[in-house]
Length: 609
Image (tube, rainbow, N blue to C red):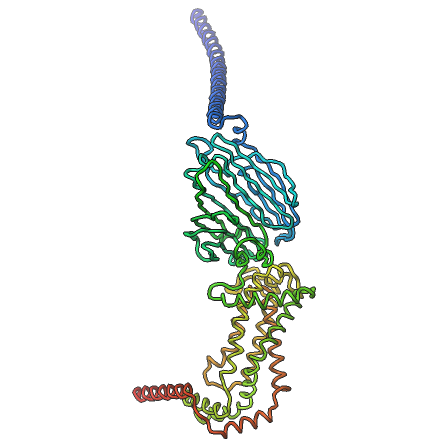
């Protein structure tokens, strides 16, 4: 019994000792494993650090072997440095990365957000070309960090800054010169060792540009943006297409917004770019980006040790006077005063509308009043041509009762038309004289549409309730889009449509009933259509149209009641009706055609019966 008890006690003690041993052993094992893992992790970190250091050293050694010096190594790895140069109109921030302008601010113009207009200010904007920086190594210039020099003031008060990039194959030098009160910047590219830096003398320039919105209506601004260029001594532009190839020598390319543009120019004396291409992608999102434009231009430089590529950069407004003074052919055509099928209105704008408007604007402090005076001038100048139409309208009003009786006598539409023409001819009334005022309005309207749409002088000018004559005024702003109308309603558009309706109502009062509902109601439908056409147009244009309509109403009233003697006009009509009339060949052909149509109609009617 005792033996059994002692045995049991011994087994319990052994079990306890074994548990203690296993616990301590396991704890030590975990600690040992942790120490071993920590050791291995430390070794791995040290190894990675050594490998990284070796890789960096190996890379630096390779770059040094290619470029030759530690300073060039610093230029490739680079730290961007900015240098600011400014004159009275622009402030240019240059960057040593690529040795080029990084941002251009226009001091005299503000964006819709009240900040200065910034051109060439996005990360997408750059100028570049490939060079052989070292044997078997082609590098884009925009990736290189140049050595920037100090800003130097020249004897003619211009300022210059030089960026240099030395390499084993030669030295690149970018020299920029800014003159006082000038938006044009001289940009000279010099290549010392051009035969090694360029492959077979090929200078392949890439110019990227991303214009951003500066106006309150960025959608409309997008629709007015174009790429303009001058190639083979001829101006052209891209608006609807996404790309254009240049097969002939190109002197300049400009990315033009509604009121500003950025242009790359081959300076006079340079053999232009022989070929090239421009591609652009319009933005359709809600951002302020207009488009992404990439232009590539190629030039063949003489094979020699040294080469010079004289270029110019324009960052500035689409101001006709400024662009006209540029030493570059036809840059003033960037401003759309009439293009393509509307090119016939450009001379009207250039030699009549623009000089007259500038004259009034020179002594009138209000742009709105200047537009009013311009409208008066145009209406007075065209009044001799429009008077016959007003006279015909007065005669038609007198003959309206007789024409109503004629309508009752001849209920058939074609027969009435023939008799009406005969009656009007006997009365000495030319129905088509009233068409001239309408036809005359077409070129004038298109001319003024182009003029007001592109005139930067109107930008930001207030008049009456309009905050900006270069854009639409807003009477009501909707929280949703109305198809065809937009998210607003313009008060000047309402006044233009309302006065157009009054003119239609006035004219219909003196026009005989044609019996055709479409012709009867069309004059009233037209002003309603104008509501959708005019609502997004500049307030300057709708203000002009309002004034022009008011003048038309006043002229018609004055001519009808104070200029035309109705008694004499009635007597003249009676005398004309008594005189024998000789039909013109045109009238004879028209009557013959109407008679044939009448017979065909009668035959169709009989066939149905």
